[in-house]
Image (cartoon, rainbow, N blue to C red; front, side, top):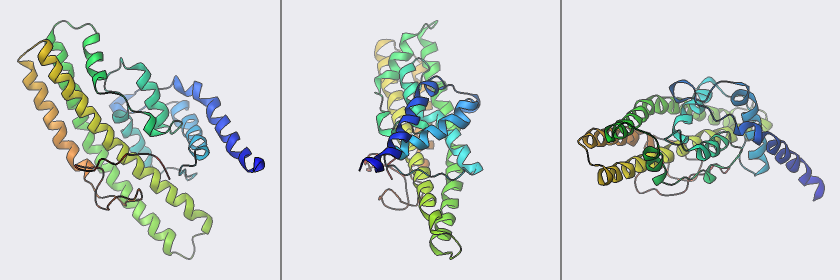
Length: 265
């Protein structure tokens, strides 16, 4: 028993040794993607693989395809907190995005965005409403490219699994990593869908409380931006998936589906 646990312990120790370094790398680059540096490109994926393996989750050693890399970059915007003042949540989100922490530990609370929005210095209440509308519109614009990216990844995963299950030329040692990669990809899509829903709840909470605290005609613009975001998020959370998490094939977590989204294998 002790000998079997040593590899897992070593993996956990390696992941833990890099956690402090990676915690300082929660920086956002252009188009809502993580900043491209040695931390996000090399250290974070390796530490995440070690940590996920140590937790017994599905983790694949396969190299990412171009679409899989883009999917993870585009997911960054939605798993990070909606306001830059949420520093602790940003660090937690970065570690969960890299899979150093399990995704279910990245929760947050819907009042956090409102507190960050009203905690800063703004010239007037109109500036706060404008920031809320801008954040909702930025999310809406980026959902479409993420969904298109996700559809390409899912289509490739179907081909991957068909080849792994039917081709006599595929070595048995390749089957498990292939399935693990499908689990990773689908888990990320479901997680993003969950976080988009959480963002919408946070925006609506912020809007309602702003109207109570400082009524303004600018609330109309903010509400329209949130409604447009909801309309764009609908197709994302209903897109057909392979169904490796045990749910019904044909859609992500949508209306009436409140099952938890985790990165379990």
